[in-house]
Length: 252
Length: 94
Image (cartoon, rainbow over all chains, first blue to last red; front, top):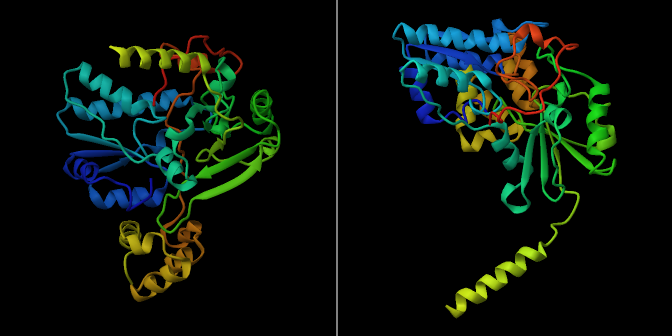
């Protein structure tokens, strides 16, 4: 999401018409911009703490929002990008509000994923595109399809089981590389991407090899993309079935 | 001097400015009486140069739980040495 460019007219209207606005943004200049739109913007940043479970922080956020809802305020919570993507508390706050009989809904936003498709020139409809939170690949048995794009989120804190850290480190990324190397050669391209937050910035796009990922410094805002490593493989059995079906339809 | 936040919003909204070169942007900002910090940041694309004018506030960007977390888990159970990811993941959040 880029300041000035990607806030939808409807989202802005919600902000302006709210009684109170909560903000979980990625840049303090964007927060300052938001403060121009409403006199009562409350940053959610102070609730984070190193060593404190982020789950506790997120629950506090929901409690803060719901406390205002329960006293009859019109509440708007602003999250950078899309509020429903890689964000727990917006979904939870809506769930809780509805369960208590309040009207609540989510407005979609322009996420990092949307910017990534535009900036990297990827059409997910062409070869397919899998998205995973990076740790999920380590915690669970997942099936990677190397014929499509693979997008991994939150690689900077891959393997963290505590929810209390904001980054892990090279040894954790090495575990991820070891896993990915079952499906990709170590010299396979890895694109490190970060969209522009301020309109004076350009998207940051860096290309490295998979083997260099552990030694590459990453921030929480960066996403990695692995381009396809294999061609699409025709499904001969399904094609044969479809051919039979076409013949049957033509005869009927 | 023009307001930097207003100018940033204006750049973000303007099709000619949003993807202009650093030099073109700096020239436009010169005409708009922008601050020295904004002109320097626009010229280089380095937003950290705005800190001199607008301050610096580190922002944490994580808003989600990771895949190993369960809804019914207590924060106390999330100690790194204690938590084992459950074999059945909760649905993706988006």
